[in-house]
Image (cartoon, rainbow, N blue to C red; front, side, top):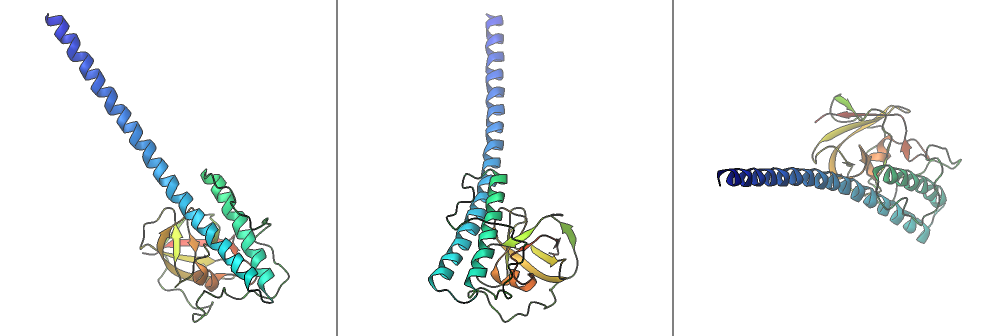
Length: 213
């Protein structure tokens, strides 16, 4: 009888241990899935914003609409590549047309800021805040298509983090606060991107990103 009780206790201990391992493994999987979901949701939002901008330009075109549309299509293609790299099911998602190289000049006049972006702050205005720790080395910077005051979204920094983004091709910088999640180290909204972009380009390949707060 004593041996049977001992074996019974051992089996119970083994079952409890196995359950704990299974629960821990499930938690890890769910955490990874949650993080991937946040990144994919952010990219999907950026994609929808850019597609909406294109639709608005086509609905009410002006002399520079074609150049803006071509640039935003290149941004959508970049978002599609980020979605594929992150394992999002949406792909490029868009019916907005093919991309092309977002870093290519379009031969058009300098593209003005989107209608929804504030224009009171000059593009060459000095960035607030000093230098900080360089993060996301080698990352490109594009725009989310969101309106409002200058801001950023990120897949790795909590809301309220302040990031300084410098376009090394023209030495222009902007310091912005992370206000939402995305699938990249940093996506700038329309107003922030307008402060640092080069004419006719909607992607910064040579960027320095610093955490300053």
